[in-house]
Amino acid sequence: MSEFKQLVFSGVQPTGNLHLGNYLGALQKFVALQDTYECIYCVVDMHSLTATLVHDDLVEQTRGIAAAYLACGLDPKKNIIFNQARVPQHAELAWIFNCVARIGWMNRMTQFKDKAGKDRENASLGLLAYPSLMAADILLYRATHVPVGEDQKQHLELTRDIAQKFNNDFSEKIANLGYGVEMMVGEEQVNGFFPLTEPLIEGPAPRVMSLRDGSKKMSKSDPSDLSRINLLDDADTIARKIKKAKTDPAPLPGDVEGLAGRPEADNLVGIYAALAGVSRENVIEEFGGRQFSEFKPALADLAVEKLAPIGEEMRRLKADPAYIDSVLRDGGERASVKAEATMKQVHEIVGLLAN
Ligand code: TYM
Image (cartoon, rainbow, N blue to C red; front, top):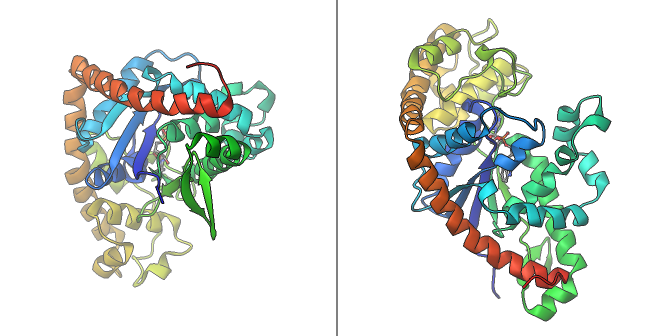
């Protein structure tokens, strides 16, 4: 029985500054996966047009994300690192997926509801169709694993729904052409062209919360800069933001269950665990019963140790745009070879006369 080749794909939008949530939810995992998987990491610049069409500095921002990938330790030879706009097959497959996905599926996406706000009629069609493009990013390479933060879980479920509907709708064609791959769906063995991708969300900090409000996600768009640690913050700023982070007056609990109902404490323990590469239980074993006045300086030291060198390296790389562009160009060429091969088969399956 042939199986899908294991392949990791993920992407980050070049909009706003990268922060600790992006690092712990995504980049740190990207780096860990490069040792065991073939990986493709994309700067998804076309996604950035969905919420805001006109950007002053999209090229600069695109290079900035690539610089962050490299500064975190991704090897551009081992992995494919590129920006989406270089491989037009992303948009082409997204169009086909727009015809596979149902409007009802898109309307249910919480990210669409949040970003469109009250005036949904006025949101761009691209914002509504965003998850189709995301599914295309992943499935263009028939990727089997996608490391992301918890906020992307719903989009990945939709990616599976799209893959499954495509596989079902074209099952005969796929079988006749011999393009199917055997896979298990629940108890059933089926033959499909696209894999049902697994999200990789686990870890101690799948959803990093704002440092000012433990009920809100840490985000690029929060007006308060104190709510997040940016990857470009210097050591003093990182330490200051952690010391100013909101907490409650009680000491840290003696067990992990004691973090329930204490969102700010829970968030800081999760951040410590993820940065140190240990479990939340390990953090509580070390700091349970201690005051925040002791825990926060330890967390600040750890965050500075892990993050400040990344920020420095990002600044160094950003000063060399020609190098960044050469990495993205080389990655784009390697991604294109794979993208063309998939689309050739998709054209045949769908019945588009393009070859
Ligand atoms: P984006 O650019 O908003 O975020 C990039 C990554 O950072 C994660 N993340 C977080 N993780 C934990 N806590 C947080 N507070 C936090 N904030 C952000 C996100 O989950 C994401 O992994 N739609 C995606 C980009 C995308 C993509 C793809 C991802 C486009 N195509 C294909 C994977 C595969 C997005 O907007 O992520």
